[in-house]
Image (cartoon, rainbow, N blue to C red; front, side, top):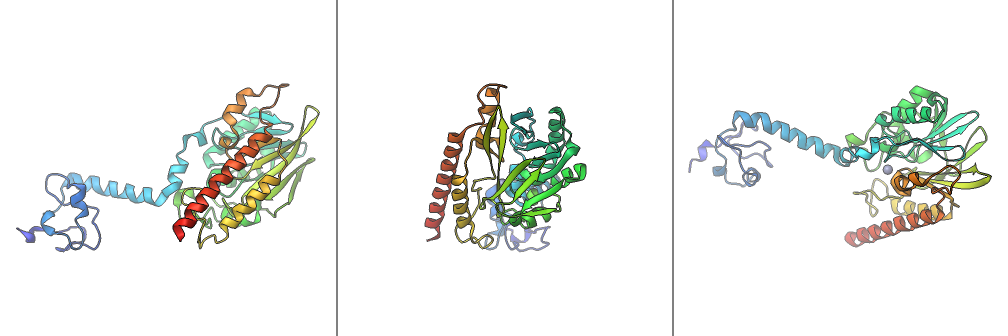
Length: 346
Ligand SMILES: [Zn+2]
């Protein structure tokens, strides 16, 4: 067989390169995937005759580039392409001075006061104009946003923060353990710090919050509860609202999720992650809850509850049992994942 015909124009060598070459080597038609995989040390060069053709030269680098791009973006790319996140949702009053101003998939809340407003979650940059429009539709002004808070330092809840601050001059208040993440635009995140699709414009924190700190404006008080694990500074917000002569305890859950790829056992980037989740369950179970809300509408059934809400009628967002069920379900999922990872680590 004519071994001498083999030549790789990419490595400029007559020997197979170290590792598989992304390029195809065949006159006329593309090589099969199996042949491509054989283009590695120890493989027979007989299967790899001559150089690639013009159409391949155009197509293959694009495909290879796309592959590298997808691998680099990893979970971030797929997460950011969730269409629900940027699908508008009708803004509405939840109860008292608390309003829903987020999208279908990303929850944002406006708390209106006589001294200006508080916004929880800036979401993606693409969501900011939508949030602004929702606030204006409700009869408030986006520029009256005085304080910006977040559920936790992940791009789907905080990528738009720098933009919100630029547009409104709001002060950014973030839980201590999430501060470096938001100020680095996601780069210090233990899981997604090296995932380009999860990075976003850095935003300066004006006030560093600690567990139990209160955020006060115009008579409204929000309490920041550290519920770590999902991020180090994941924050569950609580407040009281008065509606129809009653006072309700509101809980806005930060996030109880164990994301795909999260290492709960032997995680050098976040050694105490499992202990932090345990702490979160204790905190969430201890919070009194009438009105159950969270960082994503899916947590508390936004789409199902919204059509049931009528002025003067029973408020579907008053759902203490739904809150308990949600926490129990998420804790069970965590325990199953932890057991699986412990078993695998043995
Ligand atoms: Zn998250």
